[in-house]
Image 1 (cartoon, rainbow, N blue to C red):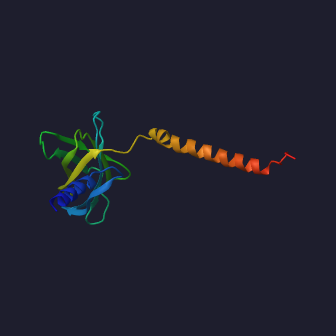
Image 2 (cartoon, one colour; image 1 turned 45 degrees about the horizontal axis):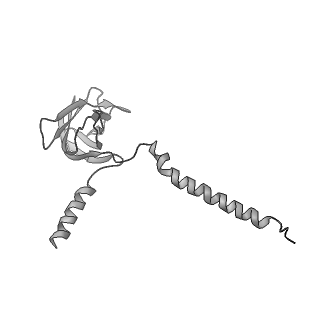
Image 3 (cartoon, rainbow, N blue to C red; image 1 turned 90 degrees about the vertical axis):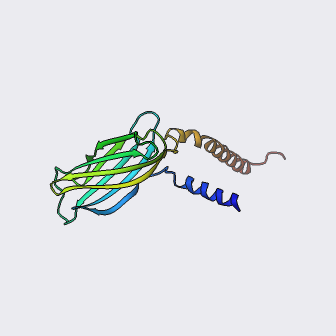
Length: 175
């Protein structure tokens, strides 16, 4: 019984690992004068590239348009090592309300994410946590290598079928 429980706990931690499209960590949270959503693709990298990507949407609560001078800073802090902290000002995407930030997540693990908003409507901050993992998807160029054996077998099978069809149509000259 204990072994089954340990296996379930280990499997549940593996399922939480991320290897796919962005997902929400904050959805329409009302904070101060804003409504904030944060989507993330928290990929860890070894080469120092900014694999931790965050999309922050900030809307005013009253439904008006967001002032262009509103700034959003995204900060990540590794929960197991608070000295691993990074902050970046999120760049505007399309329009004023959508922002994008990319940060270096140099190790796998749990990170605290904070979006600090400062603008004419006042300050606000939103916090969440996320698990950073290595992107397990193979590079696009590897797709050809992975598909090659199947393409070769398919080609040989079609060639065999065409040869059998041709042999059936050929007249029998043994008379």
